[in-house]
Length: 102
Image 1: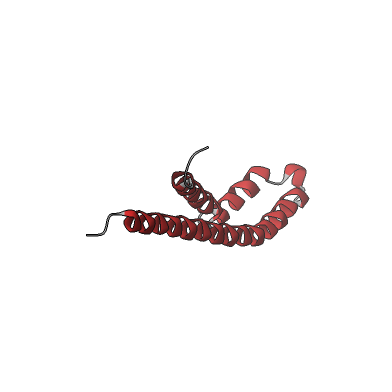
Image 2: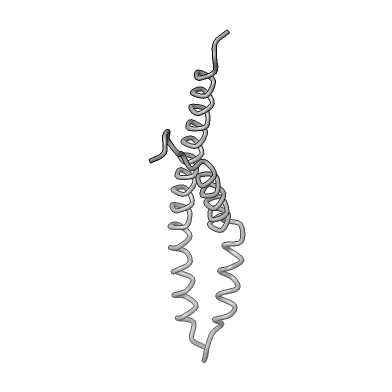
């Protein structure tokens, strides 16, 4: 059994970085372009626009959910970053307290 507490600060940093990448994917930059490309790809098969309309409605609803998820990811990332920084500071403070006093 090891002495002390092992806080995975590097893993927390990696998780925070990954959440940042995911948040970028959920960002609104390009969402409209993706919808346009989707509708263009669907077209009007046999003159019928129902599939394109259904895809457009789905994308509109997904845009609302996308923003909710992005905000939740941002909150999670902030909490992880805050916890990581708190543990890092506590570790430094504990190390200083163990140094011999002159």
